[in-house]
Image (cartoon, rainbow, N blue to C red):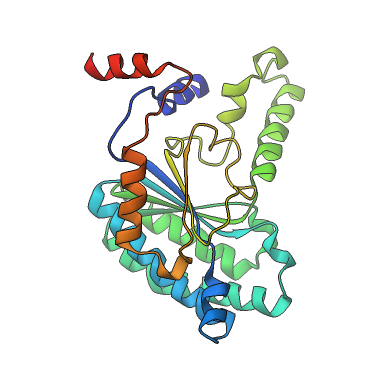
Length: 256
């Protein structure tokens, strides 16, 4: 099954639109600083940008959107800012779940939830349960997530199965490992966007981004809207995704 999933995700064809978009939403704090506002206000404006991009994905028929909301490294930020981020997370979940559910959005959370308090974990569980039946868009929120953590957890689960005699170690290959990752049931991201001017992946979906088209913009996340998203999609549509093939092979497969 894992092998079939991996084969389905890596498609040597080009579509005008990505099936799955992954975004690092960078620049909330800098946006606030530029306007002489508290950093918290930048994060609040960032939530508005999330709403815009969720709507833009729905209007275009994109299947999945994965947002890097809080990394495992973000705990290093000032304690007061982390506390305000957690409060905003709770407030946003309470406010947005019903609207997302009404609009056919399925919510999922990936990352290590053990660091969060019981109230927040319960809210995440409830949001997933309430929206599980939806199929218009899958919205994946990465919280306390790191790509290295994801890989280590997948390896640990495979090792446990091998020790229990459920899995032969000779069957542990890239398909088996990929099948244990957080979003193994979704198509791998076709397009990765990072706002804020930085040009790095920052421990986000390390395995899943292997064949993803990368797009970087200097726009700060609160300023990222439909027009900027459309520009990223135009860039994606103009690229030839070869997956190891030659350009001629890709063109031939399009005509077949």
